[in-house]
Image 1 (cartoon, rainbow, N blue to C red):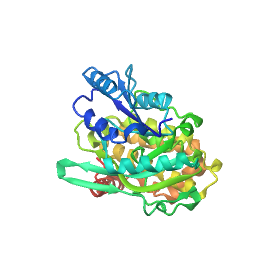
Image 2: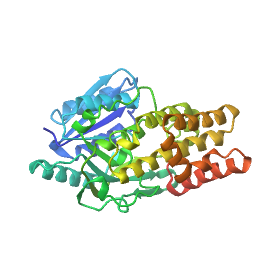
Image 3: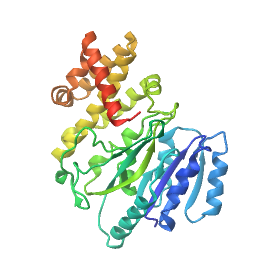
Image 4: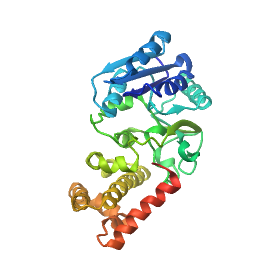
Length: 338
């Protein structure tokens, strides 16, 4: 069995995918790299096949009809043979030294049959347009280099969201929770970083800057203008997260609190984008989303609106709308997330 499966979803990625692949190859023979060509119309598949031919024991090129990022990740999970599973987007890359440390750690736990469901590591925002790098770490949320349960976590501040970039799940856990990301939909990474968490019983935080997250392309899904254009997909993902969240079934109070915070942030971002656009149709969508949450789970609605600043996101006055939009832009300026 391979130690780590890295799935690289690719769609018309010929201009930048080699950087991602080369960085993953640094993991050596203990790696399995699945390059999933999601129905590309350029040379993406040919590049993937060249790597498979050159590294037949490490790389597999998988071609499929176009189904979107979520579909490509689903394909990766279905075909993975590694003990742990990681997604690497085709325009991002790994830090080589950090990857080697990750592989060394997985080799250690595999050798001694140490049970582990999740490995958390840092990611780095790479925004070359303004020559900015920002490492997002979890030192305030987790003890370093320790096997722990959710109840042994520390404090999750607003910047401590666990993202797809920071997570490596045990592959069998993803299959056990029957994770299935929606096709032809953006922002599915939020589901990947949310739905499996209650199945995680034991985790480990490695304080290394593994994932390099490139941000700044005009067509990137997290670009604010693009997010506004795709707001219906953002709403769809938020509703899926609402439907999947069963607060009372989660035994750990800390995990309950964290997942409430994550869902709150999704409501914040979605509401801010709808208010920022400002049309009557989008303001109505904001109200409908809050009504959806309220009808789905009165308790979760109350906790978010009363304890997670959700009340501010329902302001309807001109001043209230400015508060929402300016708060969103301030967070964006500080953390450079789009």
